[in-house]
Amino acid sequence: MKTKHTPGPWKVDPDYLEEVICSEFVSILPYCTSGFEEEAEANAKLIAAAPEMLEALKTVDLFLNEVHISHTNESKLSLALVKKVIKKATE
Image 1: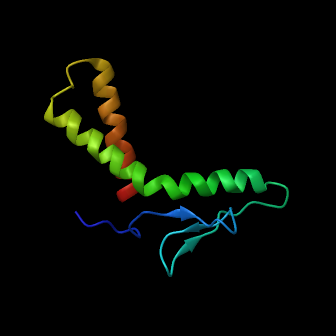
Image 2 (image 1 turned 180 degrees about the vertical axis):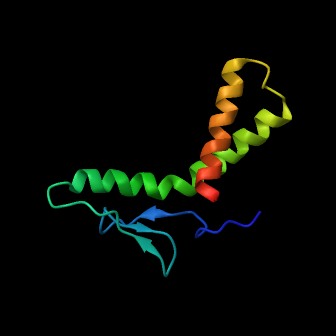
């Protein structure tokens, strides 16, 4: 399935730590008011990791479905959470 977002990898701009570079033409600047630079940098790092986290969740989803680890309540809840987050990121 083709993604709608700019494909990764994304990275935090080393010269401006609050900015996430998604491609040559796309960047994201999480808005934070003055005095919250540390929080803005943490947000940028989280946003930059988003494409990799989505791919990791898709891998976990495939693995859990392939090995049918849905017989316990905990694994059912985990699989449901994985599917919910993937859906939130892709729809």
